[in-house]
Image 1 (spheres, rainbow over the protein chains, first blue to last red):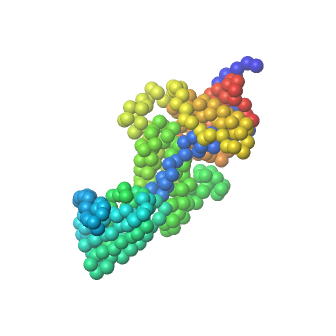
Image 2: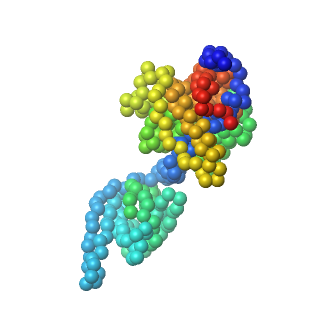
Image 3: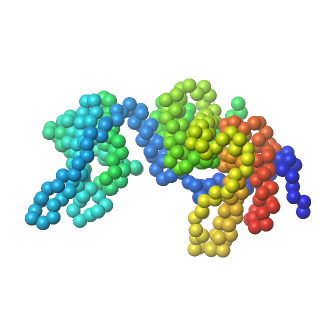
Length: 162
Length: 200
């Protein structure tokens, strides 16, 4: 069988063989190089932040607090502070007793009564600050997290690794 | 501008974009879900690593969000998204030193990626399938960058309506459809002359 020349092949009409090759290629690409998990979630979130015209809070500081709860082991907390033009937020991340895959987040915000959304890929949890500006979430998976403080404009934190 | 059937990729993209412009905010999310895979493959076909490709794809959607009312023809939305992604991908790729204009038409050395392992259900068939798939993938990646992008993007069109996607890649009319064109001809020849590849 003679090896077909590209010019000759190029000028022929498309046929079923071509359609099969291209259908195979679509499938192979999806297997060999699929879009990363969560890509569309991240894009949708970015667009919704723009729709809200949210202000991005600035990371102000991070520290570890050590506290002796009993005469046995001390517990280590991670605290993170954020600031924006009209509001500041501090959160404390505490491992949950007996578990290593979830944490409790305690938050203090300078605006009493404000609603804050805890955003992780695929989930949103809303809590409202009390009159002292305190609120909390428990049973939070250790995943990349952002907090969205409602208001005009809303304020969103950078991504936090729990 | 020919009308697209509503169940083709361009048709569904146009329907979602039209709904979004008519005030259905959720339709933008639908459009994102529908078209992001094609944009991802376009960016990757231009040689971008995963993180950079993700940034470029997200950037395309942000550009749409911020300038969407300037797209005159909703029927052109798929082409606009792919063109925007392709242009930015080449721009970034050139800046990162991964592609120069002279590379665009030259065949590239293979950089195959591993496919999933064969399933237990039908091992021989699955292995055979994987070997065929590996060879197809290998041959595609040896095409010139221009042909790679074309093949890797138009394969997501509904056969035989490849022209819309081909045009959105900036390819000259005749690159594909109604005739095969040189890129698909090169791929076909590579497959036909590979003694270990067969159609079934």
